[in-house]
Length: 404
Ligand code: PLP
Image (cartoon, rainbow, N blue to C red; front, side, top):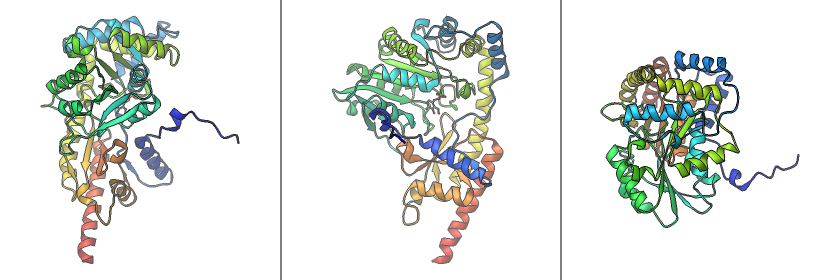
């Protein structure tokens, strides 16, 4: 076979750690093991019925052809109107561009601003795709360490990391994997620090609306206009509306950035599926129905979180702060590291082999010593997983005591 001369940019990329863990789980399940998979970053709820009906309506209306690369005008307008109605924003529809999911929105935004050699600031822990985007663009990834006690990014930390080469900061709030939320005032300070040094900010808001009180839902689209000039919001329907397979997201950015992203997209995906755009536009035009669906999912995530977090904290060696948003528990297992388990990957492997529970190791997120548990799965799965882990850790503890 001819060795395939893969391009340098792609050769530098690696498979997502979250996908890898899921693949191991799927393989073991195929082999007959009773696996509980807590790696999945995908809502276990079905897409709300009325959104499916809007998609069918779109097909009935003949929306089966190309749309403009920025998306249907109705899509752009419905996003601008929805944000205005809910958050009081005032950006025009021309600053909205449709994309094939949050991932493409992020790629469009990063690829249109980063040149080889530019520095991309990425706070740790990060969502697995962020460094890969930097690598693909030939940029230099510069990581910002946050304190493991709370993983909160501050404007001060950002300021210290900026050099004359810094072009872009990428932020994700509510955060995957930590569940942390950057407060509105801190976000404003972060963007101010960046704007002062002509650094742009890409805010991944894919988990918008998944905030547990007292944390509040916040979008950078509400920042003052002079700061928004520096910001591109990447939004997605995947998580918030349980629409991962529909592949639809969007960007909100100034006209020049939007024009560049639309140009790039016009030569790649062209645009997201026409009747999917229609369904999303209709959903945004019915905010009461749409937000009711989101709130019902958020209620269920809240119930799961309230069961899961104390249960995880009861496990010897585990510590987990209360998530403020998204649907992940990020468990600190550093107390367990030593002779027996050298890294959190060893702990994850132990949970997999001995309790048949798959979780994601923190290393893929730049946080060795942590494990990510997704609670986008049924309460029954979560209870069983926790009970298996508690039993295993008790057996482990008894074994250690008896061998002393
Ligand atoms: N951003 C974050 C932080 C995510 O966790 C994900 C998906 O896991 C995405 C973006 C991309 O989502 P999608 O492309 O399905 O909109």
